[in-house]
Length: 104
Image 1 (cartoon, helix red, strand yellow):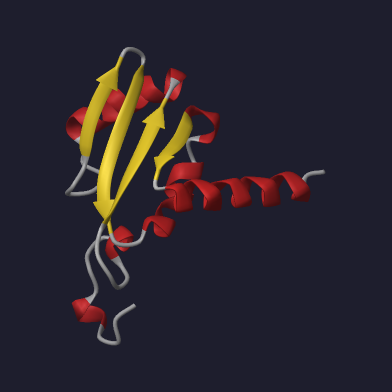
Image 2 (cartoon, rainbow, N blue to C red; image 1 turned 90 degrees about the vertical axis):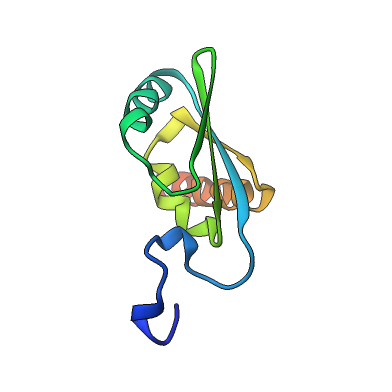
């Protein structure tokens, strides 16, 4: 986070240093249907691009800190899959394994 909060980017996915990373997320099943409707009138991030493939929806974003997206992604449960970047996909796996261990 910047020392001066007034210089902080408006969107938390853009907090951090370095360049932007492309994030691709696939929504399936009932979640895809909800996202198709929602994303037709709402933008989650200024770089959002939406593509429909049959019953699936692939949404891409260019963000500085994809790890700040984890909470947003996990809210969709089994109806979401991170396609790119691999580093975010791995972090999601780690989060899910930690959650599984908690309930074992």
